[in-house]
Image 1 (cartoon, rainbow, N blue to C red):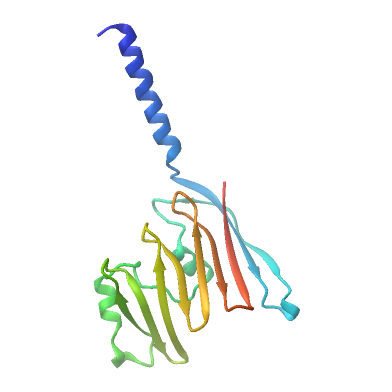
Image 2: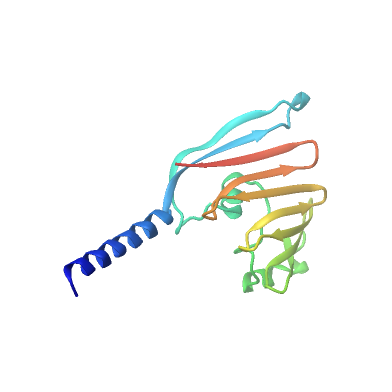
Length: 175
């Protein structure tokens, strides 16, 4: 092998390594802004809920479950993700009512497509729609809809809750 060929191979290898490193974002500082028009005369209020906090996405994905656990939007989500698992199977036990009971229905990919939540003062019927990456893109619950928009790397960009008049929205900014 000549020095010229080795130089080309080395240059190609370094280029591929650099492209791979730039294509993957392991973490970022995240800012979350909350928009809400549930005020007199539907006036919109804006609040920064999280400001430039660093997250490693392999440890803490910024997704529906992050939004629910940190900002309670939406309040109820499927236990342990969107796929069928043993934890979900144990939750549908009406003997514990009036404590909160969650029951699930699944599609052919074993993803949650319907979740009912019953408890003292709680009745919800959630239906879920997915994109081709198994990310939830829409949730319907008794007239209230949630819409989720993702960035190309799978991180959550926006989460909107709307009943047609009243709206709440989380916007996720990464830097």
